Image 1 (cartoon, rainbow, N blue to C red):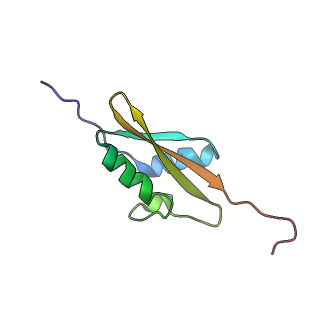
Image 2: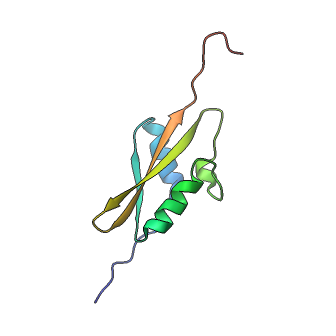
Length: 88
């Protein structure tokens, strides 16, 4: 039996794609284990050990997982910061 090797996820590239498409989910990668995908998704909003997703004054990242035929997909989206009229 031959197993297909998965390429590592380039989270800086994923963060860049998400910033260019604010509010839209982008697929970061496919994980063979649901646990590893969910663990990664849990770290995204704070950027814990993942500097590409650290919150900034410009917005934050959100993450979710979806079961796929070949594992679990990690999806990322960038949510821009909102400003209100009259705020300093």
